[in-house]
Length: 322
Image (cartoon, rainbow, N blue to C red; front, side, top):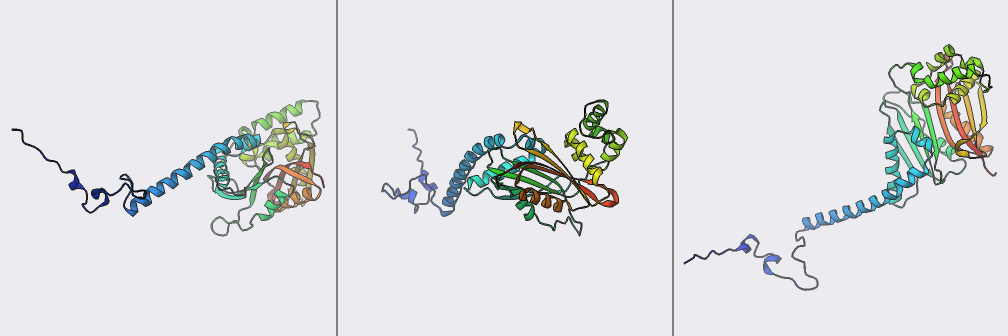
């Protein structure tokens, strides 16, 4: 006769547990698959919260990314590295997800150690750049007592006027020696064409003369040379030569044709022997007091030998109702 084999799976469960007693069936009873121990309940709860928050964040990011890509000006994507753009999107998404005002101060560093402060504010109202500049700290030090000067500024306004995003770079650019004739090839080609042309471009021939232009380029950072429009670069050099060796200021104003927008103007300013942060604040204040709003701004610093530096500002402005 076949021998009967008895199995007893219930021996794997504590006889005193709720599972072994078969308790349940009432409205408030625990289902057999529910966690019983407190630590297990905590893990399940944590997992559920994480899942819910992740879903909310994904939904917010899916909304923010296309809006951000559509609303930031083309210059932002040309001039801001991708790693910084991703940081900006993450920060804006986090604030939107928490239903908070778009008021952010971000701090990061470039690969060469320069400090970057990014201020994001809601709206594009007049005087916003001035307020941001006034909020900038003055005590940036990189190890020891080495002061970090403001050396670059990038100001951007959302096309839908929902926010302003401004980046302030502190510290001198650290780069390997580079060939200015290679980095500035577009500028040299433009200057050569301007010298050969009979059409007046309001830029004197001596500004376009090759040997002098190459010597001037040696005073500039590689970043400034490679990112500059050739015509703008030559105009700013013209302003530099006017104030070099002095305590003076030179200004050039011309209508803007960016995106076919009317009543906008490019204002180029060269300020000799001044702290860049002071030059930026004073220029922003003057524009604000004369009822001009700043939509975009760039700041670069060029060495002026024993006279220190010349701060070069380029601002896209428009008049506002007083």
